Length: 503
Image (cartoon, rainbow, N blue to C red; front, side, top):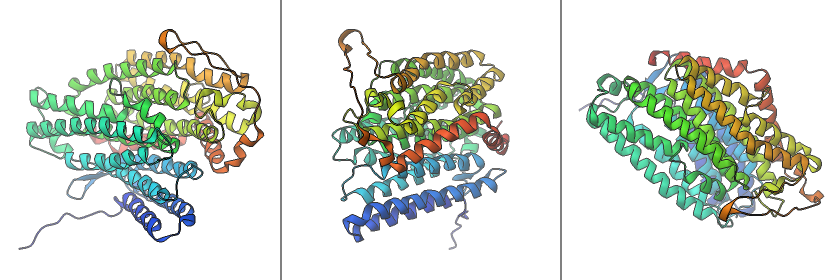
């Protein structure tokens, strides 16, 4: 008996295959190479894997002006997935650079890069998911790799705790998403997104319950409040290069699929999920920005900041039209640049300063190491939404989308959140350029921070050229796209036009 098998578009899967090949070679290096050769070889192979995957993603983007379904309609080949894969591969390349000087034992350094490539492959696959089965498979694929990466640094006492917290809470989020998917399948009898849209009844209680649970599951992965509780602890405890990679790549994967699922499979129920998502975005913006105000740890500050930024991105999803999709994809790209610039400086300082990621480690950085102080300054200004930065253009784009989508009040909340954020972004800049500041926290959290004078010349960033390179390049790109945003505008419009059939 002849069995019909689906045709496979290998080009569509080429980014994932490139990264899986790199991961396999890294694992072979862990077994076959002597300890002294593992770090350089594994880093080079992982870098080559991300570069190759990024090139293939660019080719897929160029050849996917209209969306097509591949592998028996299990995955989608379109510019949404390709653009997200480019962001993921870019953040992976930068993560390889920032991780190279990280103190890691030879016994697991090759596995570290193998897991990094595996997580990237899973995210790229997740972005292409077009039915509920591949959606969950891709989610677990990259999540399991990240659980291990958070806990892999056995020389960092908080690493295991971080991995365990992420495993427990992430598993809960995955289970919620899976159960919600089961309810949606039960209500529609379909797994494929477009088939779900054709068979969904927005008034069916089973379907609405499944939709709500899927929204909660995505809320955990995207760090949306009130499902954000894991974010500050995990970001602070994980190795900082992994924190930087998670902050950017996980957001790109989560929101890329968020857009595909809610516009394609659940578009007919927009009147149900859009108001709830708007409230969720508002709560996320307020909680994220207010929570960052009291933080002294830069990793925790950036974690709370990422919660607030998730609220801005949710605003683009709420709009539910082509302009909202374009604004979200544009902001995802610039969000990656400004966050990696900030984390690169944190990585450079915590490696040479006993204060680690405390804000005091940045004291007088402008005088001692301006090549690090300027990238952090640009990143903070961009995250706050100052003019002439990519963050300003991105927020303006999102506000325009909310106003045109009849959610003007949500655009006002983006402005309010940006104003609140000045309280902690400008504090970081003040510490770098004006010296130490003392901050008194009320109640049981009260703590006086001692001033630390002087500066060790050995702490100069030139001793970490790869980290300095990442910080300068991403900060320069943040300014470039703030002044000349047209290349990213064009890419965002092309992503939207390739998916115009969804609207």
